[in-house]
Length: 344
Image (cartoon, rainbow, N blue to C red; front, side, top):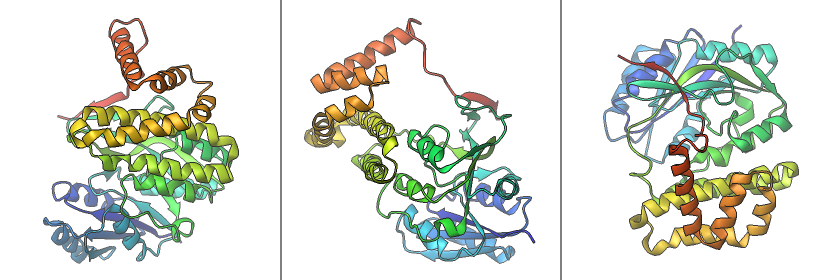
């Protein structure tokens, strides 16, 4: 008998995209589904849409709660999950029709605790695929726990995203998402992956990660710094359980801190008095020696760290200098995502 898969879909202010998402789930080739639509107090028509789907499809359960954010909605939905496997789907994303069937077959074939699929970055009129680390035709990659944790920390092949993965439900049932934070997956993923014995990467893209036109620069707020809090919390975990990954973890904290320093600089009006920039600068200065040792094998990052310590203006000037050299073709440009198709 085929195992049941619980699909948890948190819903909030996505009336424009919800039909596309739910239709991609109800039309899956895999038949044994339990689809849990969680209306997180959405002020638009999402709740009624979810109820209509539940009335017409016995596999669908529509539940409603007061608004509490994505983490709270996922946690609420997990109370109703009874499947052997669980998948999280964000309500503005959508799935290939055979995604769940492919993931379940892969999990059974390899005895995998978690299976991750590749995905498309989906814009309104075009799709992109990240071919920097693998190709769509590549065979599945099987990872043991140690390799998995390293890949998770690097965040290139194994993503911190909760979505796009099939989990054995008993693996995640007692690990709730942290409420009240952005980038909640960064606080959650390492706790799950510590329990994983076998992890499989599928290079074939089977879901669509929708990229809204909203710009992160235009909509940036200091709340986005939650990602650094999550990375630091994870670093404490890495220091305790995976000592050999400390340097990789520190590199990620440094890279992310520098990126957010730039974003705060661009959004100076949202960082009154430079409070948050000062906090990032203080962290880097106070941990300079440790960070320098961690980035010793990364020439570019080491230069950026040294310049930032002297003064952030030098670091910013260096980035501008690199940008000019790339524009002139004197320095290779970073690899870009592969454009797959332009929708008509």
